[in-house]
Length: 148
Image (cartoon, rainbow, N blue to C red; front, side):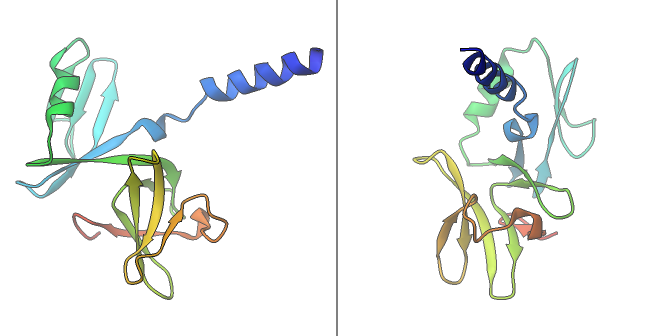
């Protein structure tokens, strides 16, 4: 019985310590051709490459509505995988990387609620947790929206 309680406590602790990076996203503005990363603080959320971007106060009820209303006409939201590449950079949906054979893109499949690796020349798809993919060897070299 005591072992079971310890296992439950360990599981609860790991659930409560989910890394916040997996909840992040970035916004591609098609009109200005810029990526905006939200900066969360005690005063609210600021979007933009710098703190003088669009700001939503913490108590703004419009914040979630505005994010949900971005229907892809001007803004595209990319989800964060919560993983980091070999340089420590966060990996987002639509990021791209290359190996000796081809270029790959990270995609999110809504029906599976999971991230996958899409080989761009062969269209082969593998789950990011596939043993053939070593995240530590990946270096993001661009994304669907722009190249780095």
